[in-house]
Length: 362
Ligand SMILES: *Cc1c(COP(=O)(O)O)cnc(C)c1O
Image 1 (tube, protein in one colour):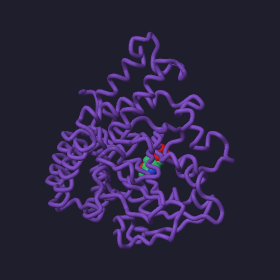
Image 2 (cartoon, protein in one colour; image 1 turned 45 degrees about the horizontal axis):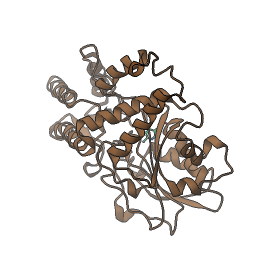
Image 3 (cartoon, protein in one colour; image 1 turned 120 degrees about the horizontal axis):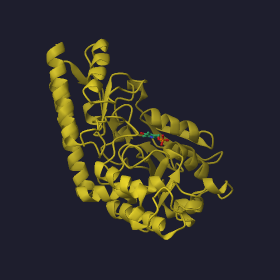
């Protein structure tokens, strides 16, 4: 669509255009019901079909079995930062956290309100520019759970695989910025959660995939809305759910299936990221900020040789229809967020723009 820009925003981020076009029609009239998706009762048959299909497609995509619940919760990823420790920690109990950036730190801060936190490893010593090696993870004996951030949206780093944790300790993952960008073995997770606005849909909604025994083990003295069991029992419809977000997420799941599923998505994402990193590596003006073995396929962070050039780069790019390239204020420089829905051709356009910029300003 010619009136749309190549949006490199880190989140809310670009969504698949076929999903947006379908949503435009379904806002007016959902599936011939004469009522739009925003206006349907969450207890009626049309919305029940929407949420059931969303869950079924999610299970299908990630091969999620009966051991796990699939929940659609409000409050974004940040609510999970406190809801998880609130359910499983208490004074005297401790959890292990791997600290790989701003979002990990926020999760740690919330967990400390409810119990002890052991930081099993941190890459803060080098500005979060790397993912700690498996041999450097210092877990405690039997942590109540282990928490990590699979992709660090701000630092531009990503775990290549799932960390191995002490036997019997559930693994919790904040996968907000790389969920369903590659195949995932759900069996490894006590809980995998993600705010929707990077890879899955609109902000405010979180996808929470959680093991049934974890749901049962949660504190039952909390307010109903803060217990996972409430939402598991009510199939995410305890109160009025964020219906439109669930609808969009369901359409995004269908779109990922149309692309060929998670392995196809991974191939596309690997190729997209390679295009950009290859150019950054050969460039004399630009350099990547993440250690090469820790680079993210979702958020490509880079700097220019001089700070003035960075401001010029960001504003010239935006003027050319490439907005959203400014790095997070805590790190500076540039960041190209190229989540699932960001087209490969758009990455090519960015590389061409970078080459031209380098030629003109060398
Ligand atoms: C964006 C982001 C969050 C915050 O999500 P909210 O939905 O705004 O709470 C948390 N973790 C990671 C890794 C993120 O990228």
